[in-house]
Structure formats: C-alpha cells, structure tokens
Image (tube, rainbow, N blue to C red; front, top):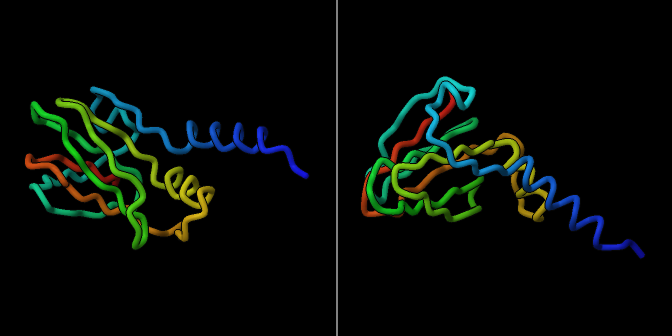
Amino acid sequence: MMNKKPVFILLAILAVIGFTFGQSSADTASAGFDAEISVLQPGMASSCPDNFMIENPGNDKAELKVVLGDKAFTEEWIHPQAKQHYNRKGTLSLAKLRGEQVAIDDVATIINQSDKEIRLHCAK
C-alpha cells in the first residue's frame, strides 16, 4: 500500500509551482508577457487562452471566479490596488491532479463577481 504522505507533499509542491497566485505591483511586461487589457464591469465575464493577470484598481477587495472548461475552478478575492498572476497551464495541471475533467487546451473564463470593475490582462 502506498504511503500517502509523499503524494501529499508532491501535490503541495506542484500546487506551489504550477498554481502560483503571486501578488505583485508589477505591470504585465515584468510579468513576462504582452497583454490585451479588458475592463470587466460587475457581472461581466471574459476568457483568456493563455496566462493572465487580474488587476483590482479599486479601494475594496474584488471577488472573481475562474472557470476552466465548463466548471468553476476557484473563487478568489484580490486586495485593493493589487494584481494577481495566473499560469493557465499550471492551473489546468492542478485541476487534473484534483481529479477535475479539464483538457489542456481549455481556456480560463474569468467572471467579475464584485460590485466594482476589475482589469483582465490576457497574454497575447
């Protein structure tokens, strides 16, 4: 019977590496990609076929949902004046490890669940 501790450690390491939600004050150029920027009003959604960054330009926390394929993957809160970077392939890999039915070519759909606008930076 396989020891579950090494499996848990491996999953934790993969989560840190592939599913990094690094908060940063850097712009998209320093994040390593050129981006198309969309403003998502409350309740709006948009998709990114590659890596992306969410920016909360407001003074209150912003709530969003990331959907992979046809299933909600995560719900996030972004602090005021903060940015979070998302690695799409890492996110898909983690979803697969969690047993979710996703394909490597699934796009990420971001839904603004706040009452304020957020900015979505999709890699070109």
